[in-house]
Picture 1 (cartoon, rainbow over the protein chains, first blue to last red):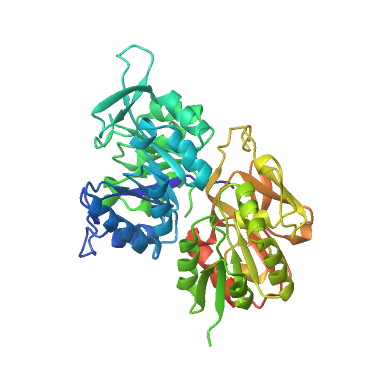
Picture 2: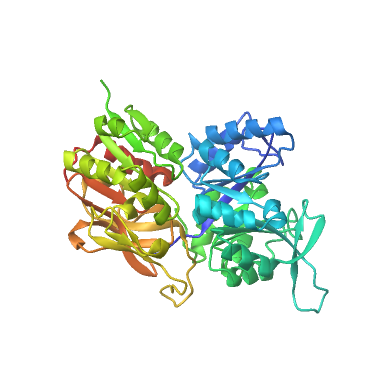
Length: 257
Length: 214
């Protein structure tokens, strides 16, 4: 009896539409984030993460509206990330019904923003998203660096030290994405996940690379993640959230069923 | 005329979620308000809260909501505290360098600590974030909620009640703590019912129909 490991489906949303493709057999409009969020909610998702990749300013209003619609239908925690740069942005998303916000590049550009945000809104709603890439050569001690701009731009910041610093600055949770694994379906970067999880007292969500249910198990048992995030394995109906939870439970992981 | 449920707004937290979850489980009029008169005229009151207790208590005292809450509880109408709202109803909290709270429940709010250990000696993450099992008693607010159902928690401080008869549910995370306390028409929960899916909505469903007697 204890705290369950969480499974978090992630929606990448552009101008109010889910991208990367989502295919549920019985949803006609497969790109509607509200329908998809409802579906995951009913399937037993523990939280929903909504990643806004909308570039335009006008599109951000659409995002607020979409978050409002999801929040009025889905009664599990909702995290909204993407383009969060100021306390005003956070206030806007929380007012729309988000429970937490993900801060990524704004934290890299101005680490004190995380402090200010946590002081103002509480650590419980500040998720620092970290995109990390392995930079050590084969045979060297493993080392990962923070990258921005979708993994294209190195920052020179050590990922493990950064996670610890963000935790000290008041992050309530770390959303850790391996840029080496993202989209590969080869599983999480387990040494990275485990190194970050050991370095911070706050929960770590593993992300990037899930291709099958065993990868979710490995993220918890070997990566010591507190939650696992996945997109495509759920979107394309390869596995349901329920199947994922049953699989994890059969392997001794405590889940909410 | 339909009943009114007032969700007290003292500038701390996401009240949209609480209001929309209430809208899902009843046809009552839901108002999110910081107006003492509106709170006083409501049939039921919800007292939510997130963030640091020092900031919350600062706002509560500045706006006079400690007195408002005492009056509402004394009036006999059903009152539900949620998360930091529950903590604010205790005597005091170790958070924010030690904080005097409203003291409608005897007991304190303690830090989980940086060295919290699980049953197998593993280090537990703080905040306690996610879905944990709640072992409840037979209070009417637990009607139709299976024993040991999971609810969504997010907190770094926990309630230690000084009166075991007021503990309505317990939870375990390194330590055992009060997941819910209550007496008479007052009830408070550490978890977020508005974010706890079926079990949470059931608790809110029970609250909006509760006659205020335990």
